[in-house]
Length: 253
Ligand code: PEP
Image 1: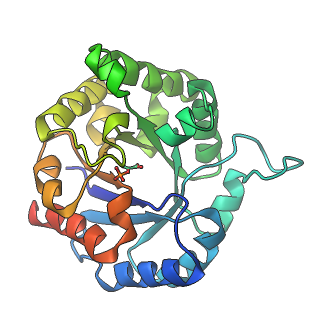
Image 2 (image 1 turned 180 degrees about the vertical axis):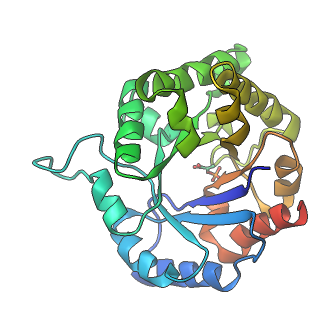
């Protein structure tokens, strides 16, 4: 059985005070179920403070992005070893906002994935189709290509130390959610893609769903056999809302 991972992507939100309050609210309400893991991904400036706040708790820390380059002369970038140094265990790579707005290609995402793993971080690889691609019935082709770019660069075994997040772009921050059946269909396809190269890795890899997940739709999504958690944007900015999603996972135990 795979554990549930409920990951909060705080994006570019909050302040010293509000992020400290959000972190402590989550720590105070953490479920005790051993197979439900919670993760927060605050903006870079707040990572070190969050690491201090969560020390000794079961809450995990991750970053939202990482440079594919080694430390050195690269103004404004953050190396994987630096994220590890401040207490991160995870890092999100290939979020659709970075692919679409910051122009990250699948090759860049694959390089970031490799850099993260080389530093001992667990990459959360985001894949997903746009609305136009879904309407053109290209969803599976798109996610397979995004996944293949990483498998080609890192090797199939690398997915044993990684998480995949299926995030249909049309469902992110829009209030539109894939139905549990739509999401399961793509998750099953992703797992089959991995299984075609390594069945044991496919059986173990966590595949999260992301896209307007909230307390009231989490149970339906998380009850699907190939959905192992959520990557949560908006609803992770409120401790009670985030914890409600985690409780939905606990109730499925
Ligand atoms: C995300 O940005 O990864 C995300 C899933 O956002 P939201 O939950 O707000 O749709």
